[in-house]
Length: 253
Image 1 (spheres, rainbow, N blue to C red):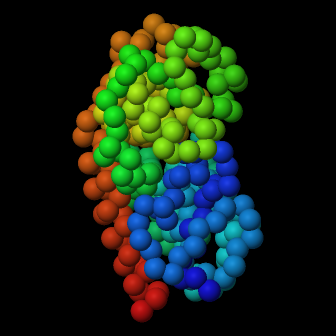
Image 2 (tube, one colour; image 1 turned 90 degrees about the horizontal axis):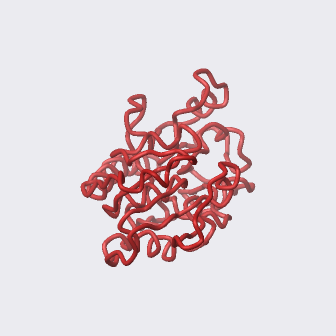
């Protein structure tokens, strides 16, 4: 039985979901990682997230409800659309520690997506395009977003963090309707324009510029860069990891 079981939406082409787990960025002893939606073997501590899974966390197939199992949510979205949510209440009651990726949600510790720890951010190349569009493969058509053929573009279903980050780094200005596309662009210090489709896009530690599906082409000169984003998010990640390590030590001693 592993001490730690990291669970998130791991079996997916959506690279933001696939590469959001802290399992991939730190050395953990006696740990495994799996998709949250599949049945789980026994474990002592479950670490779940990131992503907008908090609302249904307590209902997922991989969550053990046995006595003595500790539950930690790391880098999850906590700003639900509805003020009163039974799903969110169940998830909160389940967790012994919650790290929210939504800056300003003072109910929880701030724990941005752990993908900020990727060493790929330290080797990003200089931009070669004025503007690139990193788009959400499942939402762009629903938003009626028309991206010009001549504009460099890449879907978040590319499946590779290396490809996604190299593409985002290639733009001086990055336009995105992907949560992680905006997040990674800010981490790289690129001028960033967000075209949101839900309230999950308003919890970044430093805010991008915002536009709508109708007016984003008119706002290409409004992108906001946050060069302090990478250091700030990494510091917050280390601080939250210290709290997680304390629980691990207590349970496994």
